[in-house]
Image (cartoon, rainbow, N blue to C red; front, side, top):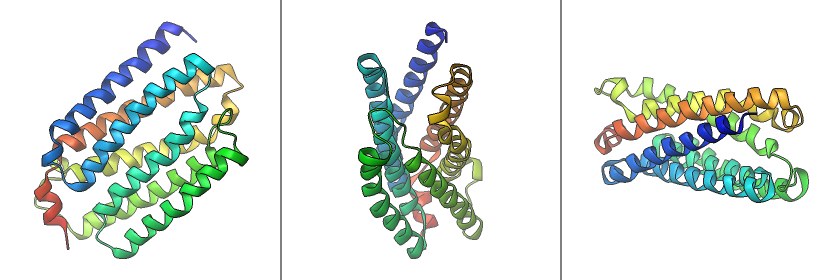
Length: 222
């Protein structure tokens, strides 16, 4: 793989993520609670990206950071859905999933898929699957409780679209991570696919943070 291309792609992504973080911080007081959580998720992603670069430079693997990313990002995205859902049963489902998956992620990192050399597919696959379910349920809620604001000006629409896109496209990608890492040709292909996905996802999150308004969140409450 061309080192220059890898450098450009990865660091441009960090710059894009930094811009999204800046948007979230600038608009933080104007954001509804779920989008404040989304801002925190963007900040954590940026920090994890920096840690990945450090681990790759020092240890030639970013697997330990992926174990952290798998559970941290799920918790934050799930919490955003917690505040967006109006159903108490769905809120309880989210809390239950976090309570169950957090210790499982620790057990997985220590015993099932060692954090120092194997990617956490046993955590990624169920969390991505749950995010797809949450996304579908939120779209259903949006249909039942439509807003007067045009849909393309609703932060919740862009956030939900971002999660649906990311979760569905990454499901297969991450599921094969422990396979393609030993195949250089497939690894190169998936590397570009991976960054194509996260670039699009980050842009959608940025749009969500730009379009969200706290009053929209209040209008959607029941």
